[in-house]
Image (cartoon, rainbow, N blue to C red):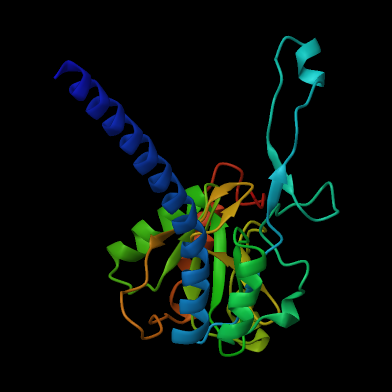
Length: 250
């Protein structure tokens, strides 16, 4: 009896180990499948042209700090050749931005070969545009817009910057809006024709990309506000940051 119980105990332990391994494998696959699924949804359901971003890689250990008693430090860097890349992992490289597509077969092929690649949206044209600003200013702007009952579309967030998606605009429209402002902080960035934006659930060097305001569930493309309805609040919020909105704060 004791021997039988011992065998059963070993079998149960083995089954728990096998199930644990399967759960870990499914989690890894789920993370990668989430990227492919999100890219396909954007491309085929919403008709937003996407392409894989350059991604990140481990930066290795930095020994210099050890001499100062700081210990070894690790980090992540951009996979592109530029050692001083200002948007590490968060930009297109190969393929270039012009390759962005809504073709499901191309999207599947890209993420089958690079399952961890960030999702990059090519902004402008028929696709959404966006306005991005430092995260602190972004939270302040959303609070002000909510207070005045302004309807917002999806908002993309990273640990350092928030991006508000807006309906497509052209350079002439944007120029008129900015000309009417007394001053536009350099930390406020406009992603229009020829621009790009990294979408959730991508991972970049700054951290995880997430939805601060997620799109409504369903196949229909998300509703987007006009840039004119939000630009005043974004300029005010950026100007009110501690550095006066003069830093990009990537």
